[in-house]
Image (cartoon, rainbow, N blue to C red; front, side):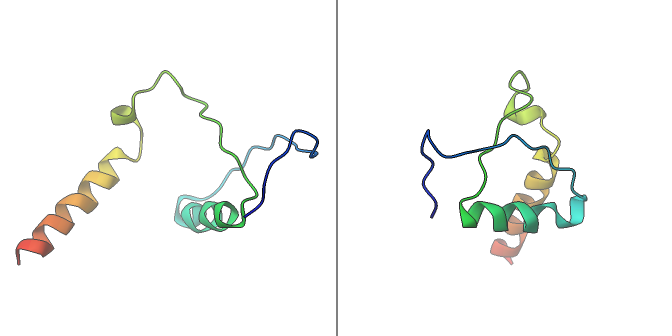
Length: 68
């Protein structure tokens, strides 16, 4: 894992990714320790975010499969 020090050169970048490949790309960058994320919508509660419905759908499917 990469350590960030104040003297290391850094740059701010904005990524535009397709929804289908976003998870894989961000996961790979995160595992390499090469990115730090900044919340660009700090006033939006976690329950109002776009991905919440997808997480709820996954949790519901997990619940259904566990009871089967």
